[in-house]
Image 1 (tube, helix red, strand yellow):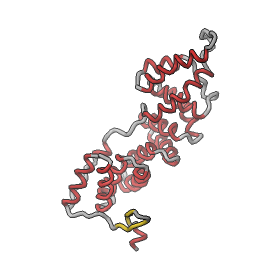
Image 2 (spheres, helix red, strand yellow):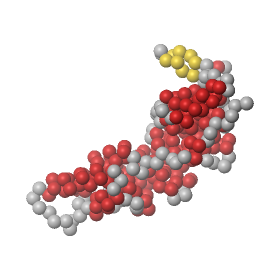
Image 3 (cartoon, rainbow, N blue to C red):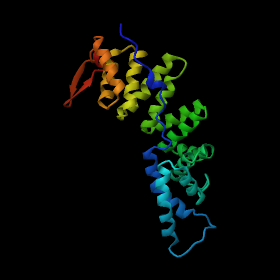
Image 4 (cartoon, helix red, strand yellow):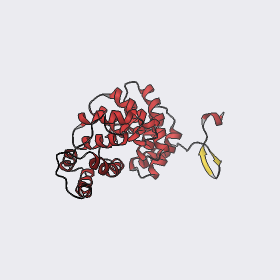
Length: 256
């Protein structure tokens, strides 16, 4: 009898992206143009004002990206376009900065516009804000939109939400699909959670071992422990076949 695999990964914090470094790489690129174009009209302008504004903004951008809220506040005081005025990518950046500044309610309309135009990072952050406010249905919609646009965080967060559904059969099946997509994008925690789904919902311990192997190779220590647990219980890896120089798992159709 194989011991149940620990479900701690489902209960850990989500992979939040509120101050994600990838998000703020977009912030650095776009905010200079945004604030130069939409600078507060009451600011004193001098010769070479554009260069001066850029010089003032860059240190604030770096500080804001490091989570210093006062710097985010100063950026926002420079003046930003409204939801109706902003371009799609800029809407996402403004929403991200508002959220980093603790203004999640004000950020949502900007992120909604961004997500409606299939800006995947905007969808992921929108899903996070919905989730934090308890609006799980809307969070799933936003995460699903991000995942469908190949955003690994959207797929992962979608899987975690699905795994927490009251119906374990429905939630486990849906989570398997989401975690599979995130794992295929080389996200270690998704591979670990995928192994947990195979072990606890599907009772497919061979595939659980396979994905624990992958997560262990990515450096997830708990996955290495679970991998050893399955091996000690006599579980072996699923059948493999060679394809273009690589060994891949046989799926159910190939086995038949």
